[in-house]
Amino acid sequence: MALGIRRFLALLQIWFHALMQRIIVFALLAGPIPNHVAFIMDGNRRFARRKNEPVAKGHDQGSQALRNVLELCMRLGIPCVSVYAFSIENFKRPKSEVDALMELIKRSLLEISQHGDLLEKYSVRVAGIGRTEMMPPDVQEVLRGVEEMTKRNKKALLNICMPYTSQDEIAGAIEATIQRCVDGEILPEQITEDDIDGAMMTAIPGSPPLDILVRTSGVRRLSNYFLWQTCSDTQVHFLETLWPSFGLWDLTPVLMDYQKKQWTLQRQWAAERSTKRHL
Image (cartoon, rainbow, N blue to C red; front, top):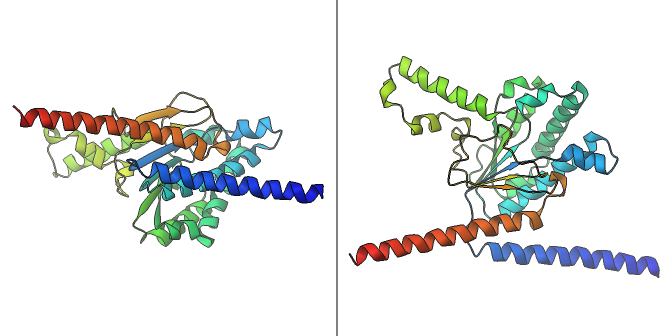
């Protein structure tokens, strides 16, 4: 009898949680939705240590959190999501951890390619951003397979940044722009911000300007991620939640803050237009 009650309560809790999710998503859809949200997925190792589990287990749970968050973003109609999956600096970590991370990335990509229901359902195209040639050949092969499999998907874009640092991306963009000058395409004095922006790795798959950057785990730094893309219009949020625990309850206040600021801007623009009409 007690077991049956516990099962009933567990099912009731699941049902209530799903209902609340639908209500919150429906409410958020009534307001402006960002075009591009990026995540620094931090806290996997601390999450594992707090639970006295192997670090690899924390990365596994972080991978599942990414799937959940991606689906949530797709349900909200966010057309571009970028994630910091692996920094070039991470190669300095112990070899055993680097190998485990590469294996996790490979396994996650294989899962996408073999069971790509989420990407197909929401027509998500996957793009690898970074020095992918630094990864093991088998991981590169799987990534190319996922990119090929999703290249015809048009409704949304998932940028997986690995191995990536923003300094490396900016240096590459400057080098490419200088090469355009050498090739006679443009004159040095004609170089603009737009030329550098168009040479960024994120521009290749067609990423829109960055609206929101979220970092989990309470760390308050960008860690060499999207330094160019994080401009004056980007809202940056540093959250205490560790990445494996991140979900709708953490993302909702972020999106509500974005919507509040967008509504404020819309009222300001409307007031300015009204003032100009009466001049």
